[in-house]
Amino acid sequence: MTQYTALIVDDEPDILELLEVTLSRMEINTITAGTLNEAKQAVTNGGFDLCLTDMKLPDGDGIELIEFLQKQHPEIPIAMFTAHGNMDTAIKALKSGAFDFVSKPVDINVLRNLITTALKLANKQDAITSDSPALLGNSPAIEKVRKQIDKLARSQAPVYISGESGSGKELAARMIHENGARSDKPFMPVNCGAIPENLIESELFGHKKGSFTGATSDKEGLFKAADGGTLFLDEIADLPLHMQVKLLRAIQEKKIRPVGHEKEIPIDVRILSATHKDLKQMVDAGEFRQDLFYRLNVIELPIPALREHTQDIPLLAEHFLALLGQETNETMPVLSQEAITALQSYPFPGNVRELENILERAMTLCENNQITAQDLQLPENSQVEIQQEMNDTKPLDSKLDNIEKEQIVKALQETKYNRTKAAELLGMSYRSLRYRLKKLGIE
Image 1 (cartoon, rainbow, N blue to C red):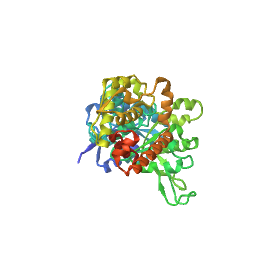
Image 2 (image 1 turned 90 degrees about the vertical axis):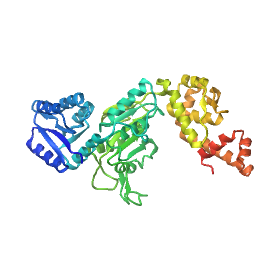
Image 3 (image 1 turned 135 degrees about the vertical axis):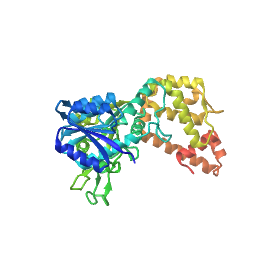
Image 4 (image 1 turned 45 degrees about the horizontal axis):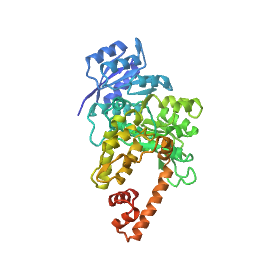
């Protein structure tokens, strides 16, 4: 069993004793320091797996120690003790590189959870497993994002992921989770704009049986389902104002109150959030709470639009075509040079998601296993805005799928389910029909 050693930095004997006893019961060795200089000297000597420090020290503050550790030993997670309710200090610590923070008076359960999570980093392999999500691309823009993700994975700081629709914000969130200390716990994504306003509180926090009409049994909310792991709040800009207040309290207090419950329940989740909207602009317009924005946006991770890294398009296209080939058990078609040039010249208002949709369509249209520029059916520049609206309008996509499904079923019935004849009747190749049958779930 690995023996860990923690450095505790505080000048209050009572706090030192409490921490030493707590860590000792967790079978963790401790070394104490009462000043900033003593802590720096101890760190220089090395051998620590974790550091816990107070904010106020006789000869400096915890922020200085955090910055010192970031330069000398960035692999050591450091958590800082802050006065209860002093979120400004906590956020400053997180921005400086702290793994997490603990409010005084110290809640032992919260402290133990923090220590357990932090020490998982010591066992975390640097290599990404084949099952881990990956942000594909060799461009400087994507390389920069990957480096930021590696750094953010070693923290518990809330991260606000900004970027256009379809640019890969959820993928980035999954990478932060999978490469962090919480990877063995759930990753729970939730689209805040897809939940009816009257159900959002119940979905996030859960409810007690009989707490409202329709509550026929107790329900565990997403916060509780993600306990120990990561909660990804996508399209956070769509969260109603009354829920923004409750979300802020849940994040700050690390507790939730399910609908109908009298007591709050402690939760241990990391919060990642995202939206394609300009959240700062919404704050200025009074449409989003400034205090919640400040709390969510401790660290911002911008995801570049596809038009900002077009050199990655051939690699992304090959990846998507390979996936589509696996789904349909078909030989993967290749992109002609003309098609690659056309893709790299197109502005992609729908970003990577639009690229995938375009290739999916082109694969059904191409002949001789080669995708030409014509097969891509790229919209003219004047139609870019219309294309963007189509990409963002899921109900329209669903309606078109239903119409297509009806036509295919009708053709199958007329040909007594002879797929070859049905394909001829529909004016498409047999391979295209097979693909559409699988995609639309037609047996």
